[in-house]
Image (cartoon, rainbow, N blue to C red; front, side, top):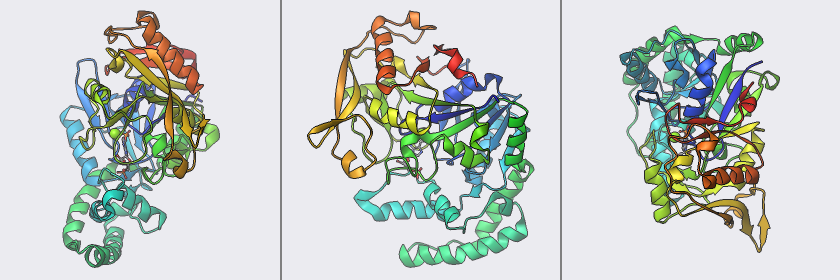
Length: 431
Ligand code: IMO
Ligand code: MG
């Protein structure tokens, strides 16, 4: 087998798209399996062309790759069809795109409820992307969601929409005092969107199973980060899908024995968007320095990301949860110019020191970081093509981070472009 799952090891935005793009150069299939358009991947190609993706897998740019949007994804069809248009206007063919009929559809009421629920929580809000992700997954689990296979069958869709709107309009008007949705309007809009999606809908689990059995190289493109996992993340400040590597099995219908490698992606520092705990957050000018140099503003919402030091305790938890073979260490170049760097190697809590990320939110809330301090470097490292090109302090920082996390670093990245990738342990990237 030759497949690999790529997962984020922090709170999202680890530049997974860059690693997926790198690993996809010789891939046959790239698959999105979780989340929806709350994810955002930016891929920069050689000529500095920037592509932003929210739903379609980044593999679509490579004409020899089949791109799959699998069962576990929630799809906002309006956003998907808009993404189709943008890709086609750049001359990108959609011929090799496949969409699962089991994926759930984000409806207008999901987006309204996402915003209304957040507003009603006041200071206790999650800070969601407002894309309707949580309410769509809630409907899926409650067994009242609308699947893509129903969206593209107008008879089924009209009955399902009618049933759903009765309940949702009651919630919108009676609980939130909002305007009800008009059934005919929603039907007309979604009918057109369903038609645009129809040619791509197929049994993606069967397709992927055959591809895996034929030893095709499949890259499973995880969205978000492990600490945003619905079960294992920093609940309730999480997203509503499975972001651990196991999510690739759940979200595609591929069994665990058919997965051959897992690569975790972590930035050389930490960022987080939205609310929730962040022990190593920097609220000073160092945080601002990282935000500006790293261009840490959301791909999806444009929100400034909260920035902080590298948290090896958190990354160690994520690496364990996904049983990664190795780590891709991203954006090392962003740290150039800082006098001193810090790596959080443990937490101080209740008068003691702990090395394992606490599973109890009440304990996590009390944790403060224990830092190892390392000297920084002044050199611009964005032109480095191998470890030897890095200043000694940058090499030491990378080695220290790997040691404290306890997993090997196989790739280091010193810039956004594909060629700004240092491959340190190619053996660990093999599937
Ligand atoms: P990528 O794929 C960063 C965060 C949101 C919010 C929480 C819940 O780009 O790494 P949701 O809209 O999912 O219900 O919001 O999760 N979040 C992300 N943060 N990158 C992402 O994806 C994220 N996806 C969700 O900011 O705090
Ligand atoms: Mg993001």
